[in-house]
Image (cartoon, rainbow, N blue to C red):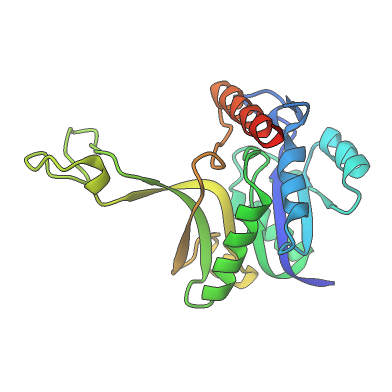
Length: 227
């Protein structure tokens, strides 16, 4: 069976910097549940896939999300040093789709609305753009390791809000085709579209502090919604 848009969430059982983070409790439920619920809520996503080597994740997903397709990651792709593009190629070879959207369990504040708008924006501009990735916009004074100004002239002290923006890839969302991934061996193509993610939703859990901050923001956001 082929789909229009397949959403992919790769997850490993082990995590070096935040132990068991993918299935650790986050605001009352396992962390990965949050992004899966957002993907399922989006009416632009035709199928959600979890790619994992974790028996814990597979058991929980089977119980809570029976509509989600589970792919057990092959042994040769389980090492943490394996490039993500190799994992994505295996997924694309396993499930046919016109377009693939990849996100992470470590983006628990990413909303269904932001996901849907990103998909719409990309599809409306395809094939002018051949891929899409999420970014955060910054207007700050940046310097390199040799104390050289990168994006500003120190002799002209512009206000930060007047500086030309710089964009940081935030790993919240990627969209690509199998053809491009095979040709480039990269989820970012020759003509990528940058999709700005709201700062609140772009929280990414990489270390323990990120986990605590994201959980605090999540609870604060939900409390305001429920008032």
